[in-house]
Image (cartoon, rainbow, N blue to C red; front, top):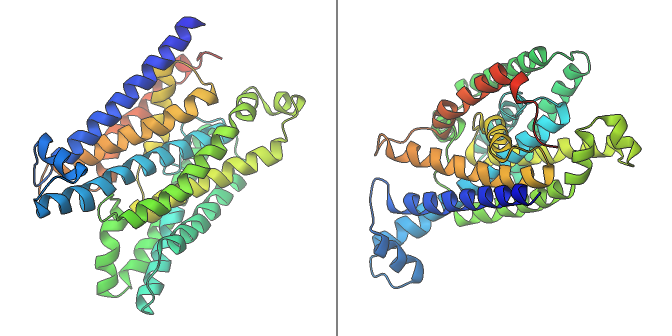
Length: 341
């Protein structure tokens, strides 16, 4: 028991160290590089370099915090979907939920721009939430008839393709100015994040994380089967509804601010389970959130710097690292079932 607690503590400390290190590297590097002392002077208010202040405080720092919050939200969303479907491949991108959110946000943006109305953060989240719920409802309808994991994933991918096709069709017939505004967002990016955006996503994600953490005990019981959970007094129907709503809300928030981000929701929870060697929700929920933040910070660093000043979409980088993990899960699923209770 003591060794297990020591391992958990060591893993959390390692994740925290990676988070701090990546935050520092993201602040220091980019198309314009700064020294460590310059960054410290800017943060403490002792800098006289207005360019450094603008780049660090108004561009890089909000983007870093957004990558942490949204990366954690996406990982947590995937974890809850995997718990709901009892399926290690389930995730908002793989199941087409992110594509559903992308569709409704794109339509809302096209309509608002064509009518001269500017969408605020709240309206984008609402639009994305509606799309997420609609895609989730379609997945639930399919999952009730198809118990096979591969069929469920295929149906999710097909729903994602349908939503993406409709999105592309809508963008094709949109005004040229609308297409320009939608292009970067539809590819997935943490750029152009403001402090106001950070405040809104914090307001959504932090309560959702707290609610998910409060579900850790019924989630632990649900992992052993619906009948077992019911015998322990868990209202399974209410619990599953809470999982879907929270997962859709987190996925919607990510899509509204960063566009569709691929494979984070599948890869990170599985990597965290493998590293911690446990499936206990009380451990995996915070670990997945921090792991998602670390993963997205790392991927965003590569997206900004590998071909600087050209910037890659975040989904391009997350797919490079996340897709092999999905293949690994599928190939070694039978060998990795024996996590600690």
